[in-house]
Each structure stands twice: as structure tokens, then as C-alpha cells.
Length: 135
Image (tube, rainbow, N blue to C red; front, side, top):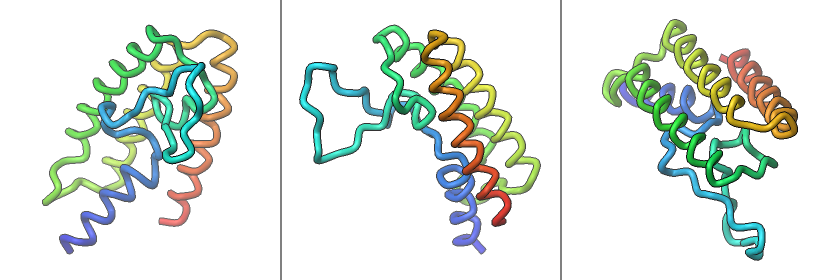
């Protein structure tokens, strides 16, 4: 039972949402003049919804702040490792938390960046729906 709860928690957080949980683990993209590293994949600030979007340092800081605020709320929604709350109500609260976070992140972007962001969000939401259907 304990293992199943842990696996379910990991599925909810990592698999179902594919967004950053802890903003501190997000690496800033390399500078535009640096040669790309083939040894590691650098996830953009803000997670996968920011893929293909080049953020200014100010935008990066604002997105990190948003992620940190929402990560704290997600942690309280999820509960502890021993008794993770993995019911449909909790899942709905997590989805709401992430949707609100993405809406705030979108406000940081320029109109051109928002178009790419919207495509990325649609892809994340499609993956989320596919994972929920499998449950």
C-alpha cells in the first residue's frame, strides 16, 4: 500500500503534469553566445511550457518567483510522502494550481512569446488528458 501510494504520488506530480515541481532544480539556459552542450539537456526556466522561448533575465526572475510560489502550494496540496492525498479532488486542485501558475507565467511574456507558450501549454494539456484517460 505504501509503495502504491508513492508510485501514485510520483505519477501525479511527474507524469501527469510534466511541469517543474521545485523551481530551484530548473537550470537557466546557456547564454546565446555559448556553444550548446551535448552532454546534458537544459530545461528552460519555467519548465517545458517555456521550450523554444528565450526569456530576458528579468522574465527569468519573474517566472522563477511564480514557480516558487506555486511549488509551495503544490507541496501542501500533495501532502507528505507517508500519506499522499491522491484522490480526484486532490488531482483537481493540482490541475487548478498548475493552470493558475501557467496563466501568471503567460502574463510575463511578450505577444510573440505567448503564441509559442500557448502551443506548448496545449501539448502539455493533451499529455495530461491522455494520462488521465489511462487511469
